[in-house]
Image (cartoon, rainbow, N blue to C red; front, top):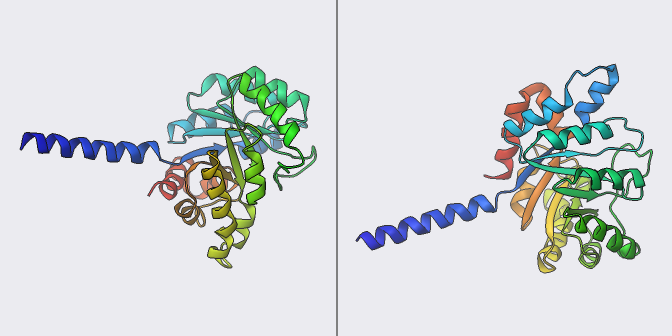
Amino acid sequence: MQLKIRVAAAAFIILHLNKWTMAIKLSVNINKIATLRNSRGGNNPNVLQVAIDCQKFGAEGITVHPRPDERHIRYSDVREIKNIITTEFNIEGNPLEDKFVALVLETKPTQVTLVPDDPNQLTSNHGWDTIKQQAYLHDIISVFKQAGIRVSIFVDPIEEMVAAASQTGTDRVELYTEAYAQNYHLNKEMAIKAYVKAAQVAVKDKIGLNAGHDLDLRNLKYFTKNIPNLLEVSIGHALISDAIYYGLENTIQMYRRQLNF
C-alpha cells in the first residue's frame, strides 16, 4: 500500500512538473511606457520601475525594442534595465545597425530577437526572408551565440521561411502574428491555419517557438491552445493599453491566465 502511495505521489509530481516546465512565458514589452515618458520629458512614468513591477506582478520576461532614433526605449534604458531585473531580458532590433549589435553584446540579455525593421518604421511589419538572407543571418547569429546569448529571429508564418531559419543556427523563431490578429474575428480557424503549419515545421526542425504582434486578451487563448510547442509570447501595445483600464498587475495576471489555462 505504501509503495502504491509513493508511486502515485511521484506520478502526480511528475505530471505537474511537466505542466510547469511547459508553461508558456509572458514577456512584457515596455516600449509604450517609454513612449509616454518621452512625450513630456522627465521620468514619469518611470520605465525602470515599470520593468521591476512587471517582474513582481508575474511577467516571466521583459522585452524592449530600441530603435535608432530612440523614440521610445533609449539605449541608456536598456543598460539600466539589464542591471535591475532578474527575469529573462529580451532585446529586439535590427542587427544591420552596428549600434544595436554593440548594445546587445555589451548588455548580454537572455535573448536577442532579430527583426528586419527599417530605421523609420512605425512598428514591425514583416519577417526575415530566411532563404535570400540565410548567409547573413547565419553569420550574425553566430556572433550573438558566441557571446552566450540565445537568438530568435522574426519570421512570417510561411513553412519555407521557418524551414530555412533552421539552417541559420538560430535557437528560436518568433512568428509574426499580425495577420492572425487581424483575421481572428472573421474566421479564427482560417486565421490560425498558416501558423499551425509553420509551428509544425519548427517542431520537426527542433527550433524553439515564440510569437508576437497584436496578440491580446481576445485572441491569445485560441492561439496558444492551437500552436504546438509555443515557448513564449511578447506582448506590449495591447497589454499596456489594457492596463489603463484594469491596472498593470491585474492585466499581467489576466494575460497569464490566457496562456496557461
